[in-house]
Length: 254
Image (cartoon, rainbow, N blue to C red; front, side):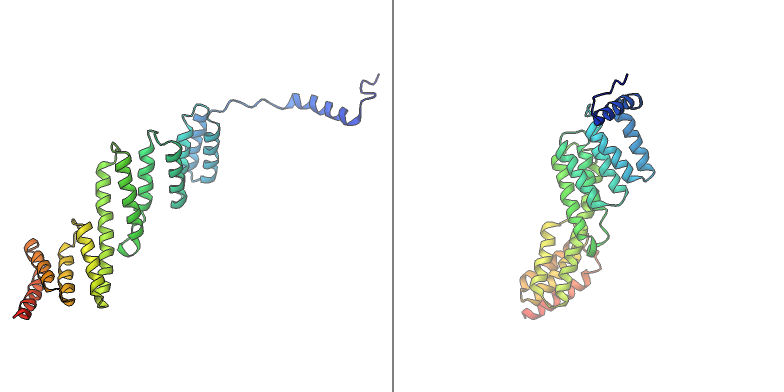
């Protein structure tokens, strides 16, 4: 007897496929975020960055415990640092801070954002942008996470950022001087004195101000800056030049 008699052929095929698939398809095992996270770390160590990020994305989307999902997002950002993709790294760290602002590793994410920019510093000509961005991110870290574990490192790196920025301002000021744009030069040099009082080349700034002010007819200001240089930096190699400038000013007053 044909048990399928009278049943459409399509339904017969569907029934047969259903019966056979039940015997071959195995139920999917429970997702283990801890094992997946360990696998992702191995993939990162082996520089299999794309595979690692695929694993980490699965953890972020499937981790019901919510214990490993934040860590997965953080490691996605770390993987871009290791792959030397700074812009993508910053974007992923910022995403972590948006999703988990109160997480115990939030200060680490903010520190890493600052460090991405800090590592772009190569010198005053090329490093100004990186130094300015790094400085802003380090200041944000201090403000948003006052108990962060990077306090000693931050202060040293902030100092370097400020010196790089001041070096850049100095270069621009000296460029204006060479082109006889003394008013613009004075603006740059006075900005250094105001914003970066700890700058390592203060004596040079004061000398340039003394010369620029004399060139623009501001004799009293010129004298004030030159005397500051002589009084504050008596051992500076620039003192002799400052004294000559003062002599020129005093001779002109007679």
